[in-house]
Image 1 (cartoon, rainbow, N blue to C red):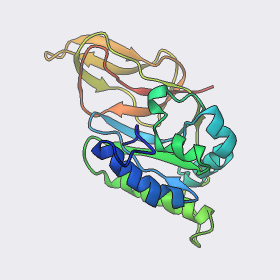
Image 2: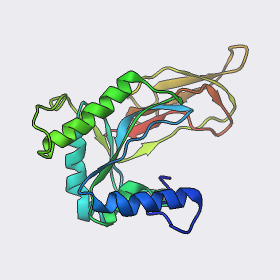
Image 3: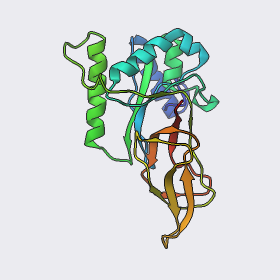
Length: 222
């Protein structure tokens, strides 16, 4: 659904779902927190806050404010270099309508993780506190929050089983080993290395990778 916003009431099923939510929820909102996770193959722990040059002019400051309010030391992937395939994302389309939107990416592996649920709940509560909708003290507002404006997924040349050598949120140096690809006998086929000094935004959960597959999401640090 996060490729087809604002949807189409006469389109395919997912476009119709998006259109109904757009008309009845999004357009009636002042702020949007769009909770996501890493799907089946990945584990994620960051806030997706990318937009375009146009959305940055309209809601950029408020989007950055929402990220800070969510807090808890969760890294932020921002910037205005959204790929063409992502222009149908809720954050972009809401931003064009003047509605600040962030997309926390928490967890993955096709299952529920208590710790990531707690982070999501507390992050939303922190936003409500910061907007004056709930009277309480935010949690994790004092933790350092890294922001990156560029990211990359190193690809594999061969297929095999990926063994992570990095952790979510870890800072790694350029060229540092972040994963090892092995065959079914355990022999090393390739080593995956960070393309630049990075914070790790996604790691592999499903170990099976194919030639040219995505491995680790590396956010570029200055």
